[in-house]
Amino acid sequence: MPKPQSGRRLSGIPAATMAAAELAAAGGGGDMVVVRLPPLSEEDPLFQDKKRILDRRNLSCLFQVPISCSAADAFKVLDEMIQAARIAHMDELELYFAGDDDFQPLSARNELESLNLLLKILNTLRLTANDGAMGVLQVLCDEILIRLRSLELEDNGQMVVQIRNQDMEDSLLKWGEQHVFEGAGRGMVASENIDVGDIALEIPESSIISEELLCQSDMFIALKDLDSITTETMLLLWSIRERYNPSSKFKIYFEALPANFNTGLSFGIDALAALDGTLLFDELMQARQHLRQQYDELFPMLCIKFPDIFKQDVSPHILNYGRVDKAARSLKFPLSRPCKEGEQCFLSYGKHPGSHLITFYGFLPRDNPYDVIPLDLDTSVDEEDSSSLSVTTSQTSHMVRGTWLSRLRGPPTYGLPHRLVSHLHAILGCSQNESTSEADIKEDDRMVLETLLSIFTPMLEGLGEPDDFDRENACWDVKLALDYKDLQRRIVLSIVTSCTSGLAMLDS
Image (cartoon, rainbow, N blue to C red; front, side, top):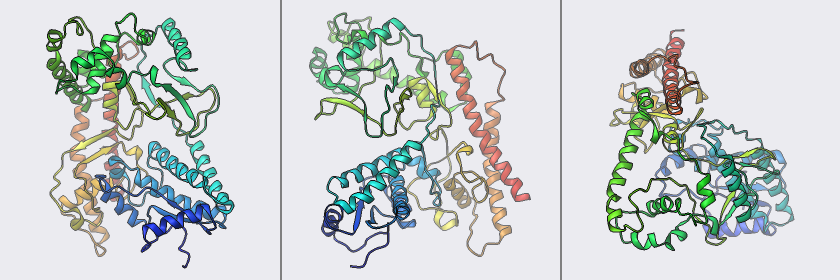
């Protein structure tokens, strides 16, 4: 059979034959190393969008690397593998803001997941590889490790300073050393160089507040038959009571926790007033209403029904917990990128906007790609038939984020989301094709930019000018609220600036 070109798709080959080829290439006598990425799941709501991008770039989940190829040629195939992995790991926001011709890393999270997936696949192939295949697999693994080590991720979270009890934290550290192994305070600092895939932290099941622990308690027996209560809520209630149990095995841990949690849920009236007109204000009000509704559904009912378990004077306490690896009976934290000795080892909070992180965790990151402003636009038009800039997508919602995150500042998008520009071309009737004159294209772009200005200029005016408030002496919640409003103002201002600059380009 003729050799397919590196990295190109193999069509018309049965799966069983392909599996055999993969085993032969990696483990015995083949002249190609076949690397198979997990196929896209058709149950993924973004399946069609990801498949469209893969097809447009002539990529698939199957790649071939000649055993005798040079390192440069192997890296070319690796680049295609990474592109395919990036697309597979794209979330809704990355799909929305990435252009079809954007071949660069999409985000730190996406790049880490993509590179770690490929490293895991290649290391698996090395287990059964022959000497010839082992050489090229080693070259690819080494290159991935180099790229992972070169990722410089900033600690860009602005945490609210909590009042600390150093004695209690020292006790917690000693307790952790006795029950697990070496650790550090509320954060972790690497005591030695830790590489990709190494376990930074492993916690035995016996030291974890988990579902198994809950099921052994009298509280579970009392609550298990209630239809309206979840396991997470039961764990929360268990931690509320256990915190005040003087004989609890977690006593030192509970005592080391701050007395108050400075998050958006505990914002005072002044901080809420400062947030008026922002997305965070609405999110906080909804979250508070939801918590109050949950509380009212459980209390005083539980106090009346189970007075020995639920005392009337219990105060709430929120606790994070993880799910235990059933096989290892421990909770493991493997590294996705290296951590050098003396560096702090960070844990991801997930893909959340700043409003969510303030509400539940009490800090605001800088330049967070998930800080977006949703737009309520008419989605009844057929974008593909109405604009040459169009895309076929299953998504109907539109949004913007800070244009400083965009790689393209000039036409045809002027730093704005490709899909938003395409949609506005459609609803404004700006039908373009190959014969559309340059003058008509400029006029269509002008209509789009002026429409966006008409939306965001009043929004910017509504946020007001930055004030001279004395933030140094302000309460933590007011300071955090003003920081968020500044972020919202900065995003809107970037849209207005991009539109204004775009209009200036068209005039010139």
